[in-house]
Length: 415
Ligand code: CTP
Image 1: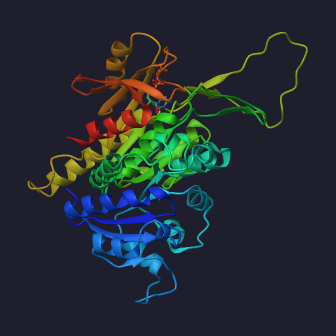
Image 2: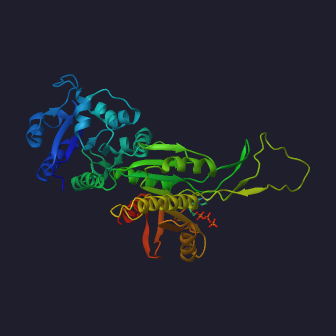
Image 3: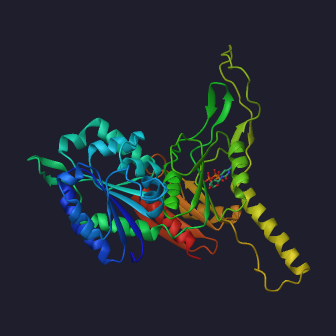
């Protein structure tokens, strides 16, 4: 499965470095090309000669021995399909999280725009250190996959979490990421997320409890599958793909319309407010003597319905053109982009979802029950039903939102 894949392994200074020797051999046996990047400290634990023999390639340690016109860190970043850093020390994790590039390994990581997987290994107290945990979070938020260390006997004599995870886990993560990278290659995926914010005046607004987590999980999964991703969101997010920050439903609709062109998939995971105040006050509304006040609300556009209408009319125009040109060999009709809606319901989930997919005109509807605290709004897990136009229902059992995201993308990608 790894035939001709280019795997770049960064090794940092830690006793678990010796375990990576087996991994290099496993990757080579699967047909991959492997290059090793070792920090000077890593070479205190494994020798350059061993790494060279096993990888059947030169081992890179120093930035200042260029052999061709391109700086080494750029050549290596361009060459690799994936970068694995294992074992990753607290020091290297911290530097990558802060964008510090003071050796060849951290410079390559800084210049690397493809998938990075990090397998940390360190003393339990170091792993639990708040700074290390914050760095891990930062890296995860940027789309870097962290293979958490396991608990057990540590080389430093402690027992606890910090041991490099199993080689099988690392191998599978690399294998999966490389195969996964192909699934949406060349596709543009536009995703909306978060609850829209409808301002009442400069300090007050109408919104909802949507955390944006499901949309973000979808965006991250689509990115890992090789797609060009645009996430249109009301949340502040740091990500390796394009983020368009919006507030209101109208802003969101404008952004979606702008990104519609050339898109292959549009997934409306956002919780769009159905109404906004008729007139937003320019100044802060003052409390008067009245016991009650009334805000007049007007309906927001239904972004999903409008998108489906746009696609329908573009498909019709194409069809008319095709008939006029008598082009019998051209595609029957335009199905791009595939449009997916979400359906948040607190009762009669499937009944309402079936009615909604007809009303909206989208290809798929992802239905979730927001009355449950353990799934849906704000939760880290979800359980959804994927409904298609024909009314077929596919239940995705409760799982972390990233697993659900991935299954949704796999399901809508198979036509
Ligand atoms: N949606 C939209 N524009 C709106 C309202 C909803 O694009 N003004 C989209 C959502 O992003 C979601 C789908 O429509 O993909 C369904 O949203 P939901 O809130 O479940 O349904 P509503 O259409 O708002 O209907 P209701 O509130 O009556 O359930």
